[in-house]
Image (tube, rainbow, N blue to C red; front, side, top):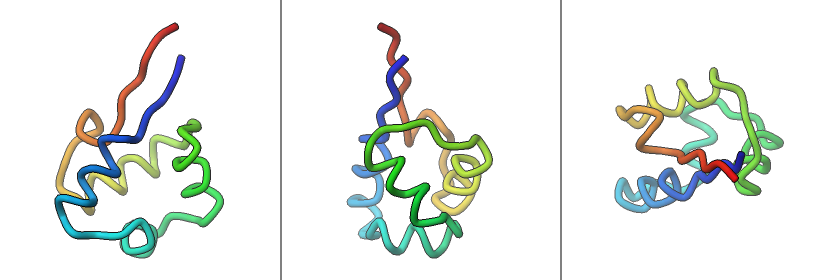
Length: 67
């Protein structure tokens, strides 16, 4: 399975928000942001906090591809 957070990065651009801004408002650890930049798996709790702060659902910030 492959994870992609490209939707999240595009959403941040639409909301005129930087990755650093997101990290601060969603209280995300720096190493977790690094994992996300590398399209690695992060905890569901982190994803839910991001969704809460951006007023969206998980499908709007990530994709999971099989193969």
